[in-house]
Image 1 (cartoon, rainbow, N blue to C red):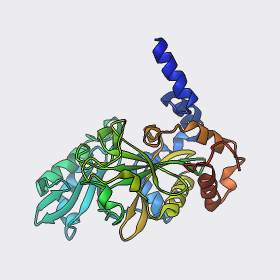
Image 2 (cartoon, rainbow, N blue to C red):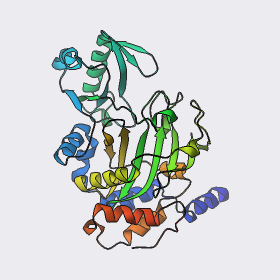
Image 3 (cartoon, one colour):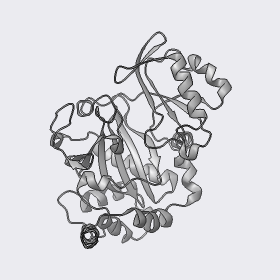
Image 4 (spheres, rainbow, N blue to C red):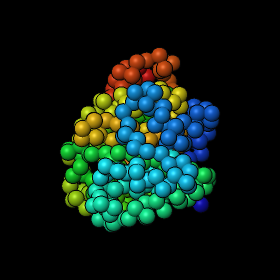
Length: 325
């Protein structure tokens, strides 16, 4: 018991944000529950992003009832690569990525093949709520597949690398790149075994990396040195994260972004209850950064450029944290 108490005190001293404090101090206080459906339902998020001209992967089709499952073949006509996901899913559950097709044979990123009937069965399961929060009846989205930027592609294996930003009161406070690998079955979810790389807010360069909560220096499949990771379009990604917070009105938000080879930075999805593993990936706690932003007087009056400048100045890998601008 004494050892556990000492461990808890050490975590508090290092500024690590715990689950209870996150829920009570930040999510409950800064996230109006009426706004949750904007991010808990990916179709709502996509419609909101279109309204605010935020870049997102193209929507190829929506299947919202069992009768229309038979229309999937028509929706997929002419599309060799695409992604199927549940609107109310979380943690990557229910997402199927098809990288190429030969007739009615569809190939996943790991080479596994699926038939049209397999895809229709999967969509039927999505509609039944097999992958949705609380098992609620759901809707299946079919999106165009992201083409990963050439500078990012070598760092991931059998999946799209994505960037998780924590944006607090409209200010980006911490960033993490999630890299798919064999252990995560091509998905970029840390709890499924993906690699998490902490990113310096000021430069977009890697500062720390973990897999399954253990520090790593190289990607387990590509064997690339993770310290060489430098994310392109960095400032544009930070500005996009701020814009996503503005369009939802949520004060404590997880923003998942990608860098598309052709379109540049784009929004994947939003999360009103972002996880805390970003601290492990960065080797730093969130509390000092959140406290610094709380000291700002009405940051909503700051422009996006001013908020990004504040983050780069106060949350860089070499700058001290805690000075309000």
